[in-house]
Image (cartoon, rainbow over all chains, first blue to last red; front, top):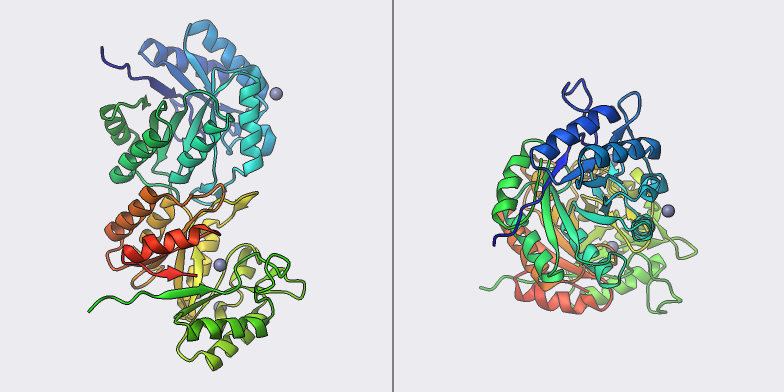
Amino acid sequence: MSKPCIICVAITGSLPRKSDNPAVPVTVAEQIESAQAAFEAGAAIVHAHVRDADQNPTSDPERFARLKEGVVKYCPGMVVQFSTGGRAASGKDRGGMLSLRPDMASLAVGSNNFPTRVYENPPDLVDWLAGEMRAHAVKPEIEAFDLSHIFKAAEMNADGRIPGNVYVQFVMGVKNAMPADRAVFDFYIETTKRLMPGAEWCAAGIGANQIVLNEWVVAAGGHART
Amino acid sequence: MSKPCIICVAITGSLPRKSDNPAVPVTVAEQIESAQAAFEAGAAIVHAHVRDADQNPTSDPERFARLKEGVVKYCPGMVVQFSTGGRAASGKDRGGMLSLRPDMASLAVGSNNFPTRVYENPPDLVDWLAGEMRAHAVKPEIEAFDLSHIFKAAEMNADGRIPGNVYVQFVMGVKNAMPADRAVFDFYIETTKRLMPGAEWCAAGIGANQIVLNEWVVAAGGHART
Ligand SMILES: [Zn+2]
Ligand SMILES: [Zn+2]
Ligand SMILES: [Zn+2]
Ligand SMILES: [Zn+2]
């Protein structure tokens, strides 16, 4: 029996607006509709960001609550994953929606550069977010923007801050962070297997990198993202 | 003819005080004396941090100037490398001493976590520091705290922001950044050679890691640090 490949759909993404692509779902109603279409096409996880009335990223728990409610209603069994990324809010506001008990949430465990700024995930915030996820039975998806983030996840797994088998996402193609490099991708997998033998992994590529990463990750026994 | 191994001595380090170890040189006079002792023992580069009157890290150009003057006088031919690290100052103050034209200066090209905070090296500051180094003919030593920093150095080398053959230091053993891991060390070298065939490399290990890294790096054809 072959191992199933999990497809995660990132319906909205952290930044795009209607002016970038009119098909981007930005209202909660559009997002539920979009999640349902992907669910019916085979996606098992919906990775969710929400937008305010001006289409700007927000961590507003009320919007996340309505989104979760809609996905539960229209996509029975679909895994709901909330983003706790730093574009929508800063500090503990990034995790204010974790008490809604989504099935999963993204968790950055280190800091790195983004195209024009520092993506700040200070150690105490990482610990706080991980604690909130444990408290609300939320499974983290570790966002590995660089190699040391895999080591940090393994450390947190070993001491119980990230319980159970770790789910890691390799993020590649972000300017000023890690490019989509095949040798690095292979080393990421090798390192993940070595440090966390029970881990599962997927990969997110920025823009045109996603299709390349999906080929690599599926061939390597990982999970895909669209 | 075998290739010489360059020994770089970090006489003061970024944080230690007399209360940690009475032998740590904290005044400029002590630092010059310490550099001279290392120079006579075979060190070719002095990696320098300066301290204020309370032994706190500072980027005070006046102290750096006196230190450089002393090293030039008592250690003829020794390469002077100033730290532009983020513990002594923030923003452009970190590079205020570059106009003193040290032979070399450290240059972080990415961000990462430190034990209790984010080590912030935003892209525009990295570019500004690299520009100051070019303007004053200062050779950068790239501080690679994580794998993506090697890619960033290669990118900056390719477009001329870091001219010539790149000198990279792998920094390992910093809590919440990259641990001293042998497989990563080997991959760092492999990646450096692949992306920057003309590069030279050395390694800095925090505390007890230094002696381990020196064994690894010298055996691999790199340069040592004490
Ligand atoms: Zn996301
Ligand atoms: Zn809570
Ligand atoms: Zn230093
Ligand atoms: Zn200048």
